[in-house]
Image (cartoon, rainbow, N blue to C red):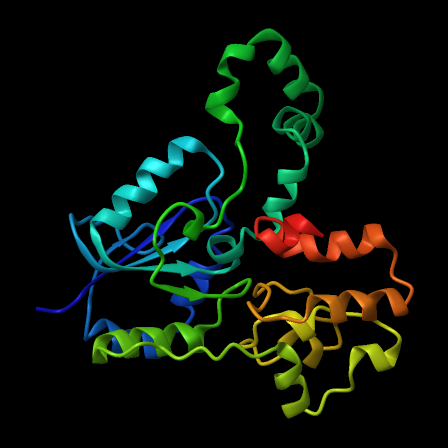
Length: 258
């Protein structure tokens, strides 16, 4: 029997699932080898068990924990799909603001009135805190990035079909910048997160004239002290340093601790 593959989403823009659909012809070849049994953006079918569950999005509400644990219990492999699932992504910045204050800031006077008029319903529509998937359940693999990289998705699927583990080396984006012969943004008087961020994106942002903001998460053995010192030497204010670390990684211990 073909392996059963499913896709699920929590708090996210669902851009990583769109990136999967944009794999186009190569995806069609993969679909000859697997059964796509659940994918809200593509089909209406559902199944009871999955060989591989791809889960996009971060966990915001306690009520979502039960659903994620149910998906985990029915899956042989669970893959965190994209930055929201892997490291919380930009929405984790709300972890540093009280939920009621955050909701009022986003939705304005209507939210303030709702809190005043109907406070007992607060738990039904406000998040508690943003968490990546591995803060709630065991995650077997991570496809990093915002959005995830299609080539890494294809590599992971092919590896699982062959019964091998996908290989995602723990190297920095700077490695890819050098291979692509990019001028270092620090030499241009700018700063970035490339020295401490997981590679795998082919340094796409720097290739196109921007800087690395760290969407793929912070490397486990990154030299944070040296990176912080470098940012300070380039006159980056402490508040701006915190903002840079928390932009994509506010749900990670490193982002919370800066």
